[in-house]
Amino acid sequence: MTVSISCRRDIEELQRVEAAAARRFLSVPELAFLAEFGVTDAATHAAAIEDGQAWKVTGSDGRIKGFCYCERHDDALYLAEISTHPDFQRQGVGSLLLAEVKRKAQALGVSQITLTTYRDVAWNGPWYRRHGFEIIVDSQLTPELACCLAHQRDAGLMVLPRCAMRYLLGEGEISVDKPLL
Image 1 (cartoon, rainbow, N blue to C red):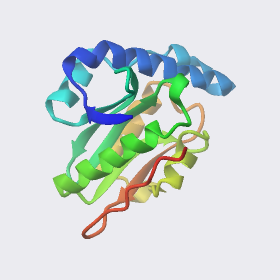
Image 2 (tube, rainbow, N blue to C red):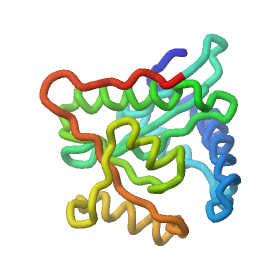
Image 3 (tube, rainbow, N blue to C red):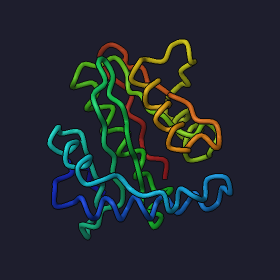
Image 4 (cartoon, rainbow, N blue to C red):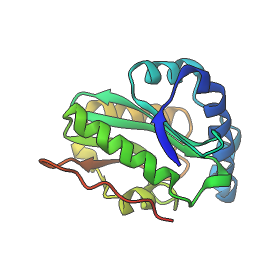
C-alpha cells in the first residue's frame, strides 16, 4: 500500500470510497441514516487538495483504498474526514493515513491534531483513543471546534454523543503508529 497526496482527478473516486465506507453505519441503528447522508462535495475536496492536505492510500493495482483530508485551524491540523473502503477495512489503511497526518502536522509545526467524531462508535472515538487521541472537555474547546460541533448538531448528527479529540504533538520526533494488521 502506498500513501500519496490526492489530486483533482481522484475526487469522484474519493466520493465513492466515502459513500461505501458510510454503509458501515447501517450496523448502528441510530446512525443508519448516515449511509445515505451524502459525501464531501467536490469543492471541499479540491480545496484540501490545493492546500496539500489531502491523502489517499492505493494498492498495487492503483485502486484507492482510503483517504483523508485536513484543514488548518490556527495551531492545529483538523482531521475533517478519514474513510476506508469496506473491502479494505481492518488492514491498516486508516493507520497509514493517520501516520501521514501526524507527519504533516509536525512539518507544519502545529501543536496538535484535532477532530470531531462519535465518542462511542467502535471505529470512531475508541479507534482514535488507541492511536493516542484524547477527548477535549467542553471548557477547552477552541472556537473552531465549538463551531464544528454546533454545525454537526444543526445538521442532525448528534443522535449519539459526539466529541472533539486531540493528539498532542511533542518536541522532536513524533510517534507514528504502525498499521494494525
